[in-house]
Length: 353
Image 1: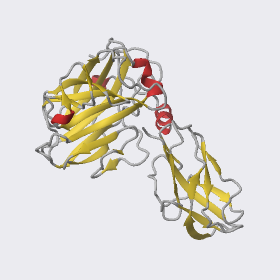
Image 2: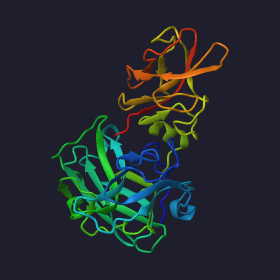
Image 3: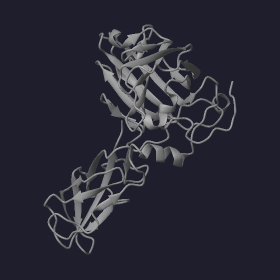
Image 4: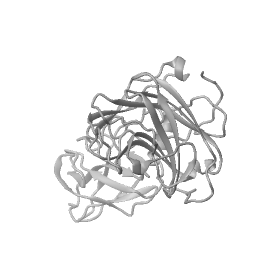
């Protein structure tokens, strides 16, 4: 049943819940452990399983969800791992900042979402703290293969013991387990000491290349009441995502693309310096983070593209960011500047948890 209510912006603390923000691309084949795919969604794995994680148009109906959700996040198994070792795991993860989720500490809360998994049976969602020394696992069931079903999970108030961050560090790590070895499995329905990702009953969604695993529109709310689904407006979602990752490229252009559209440029005074070498972000970052520079000519990282006064391309030359902060960075020409030319470059700024 869908319950409608007026929900303030940002009450749902998940990042990019309906998977519409995809600044780095919409499909990630053979995605590596610890890699972000769609904004806000990290892929973790230990084992031989391989997945393609992508933005997918398969979503619940309006009658089911209460609004038109454009996308889901999908993990498609392309190499199976049918025998999980004790220390193996595979999860889709949301890392939520302490500044936003600390209001949930030591209080009960609800997580609800829609799921569509090929593998039927018992699945798990876990919530762990920033110190990875306390975690709570809840189970949900996929009853019918490859069918959209809803999960509403209630979590008890977290303990005061353990390491909890109420600042720009990791507040909650929320994991949807695709599979888990015994090292990372535990008894469900209670706060445990340690870092666990699934219950002891978790099925293995990585045991066949036929398995797909889709999640749509997760919501997390303080309290115990069953509230309606809520997806923030696009511009609010993008702003929230850019706190952790921002690019100079247009929204639909992947970093590393050979293009000058959206690029920054500065007049080169000499070997190391430009006249406008302080570049400001649209959205302040969680922390200073890591800035990567790309040339505009062929998209190579750690380079800028030099142009003469007539706008004619001259060469790609080495560049880097320095004096990075939460709001800006400076462009270093690394000794490669030619006075009187112009330095064109794109950037990404990564401050993800």
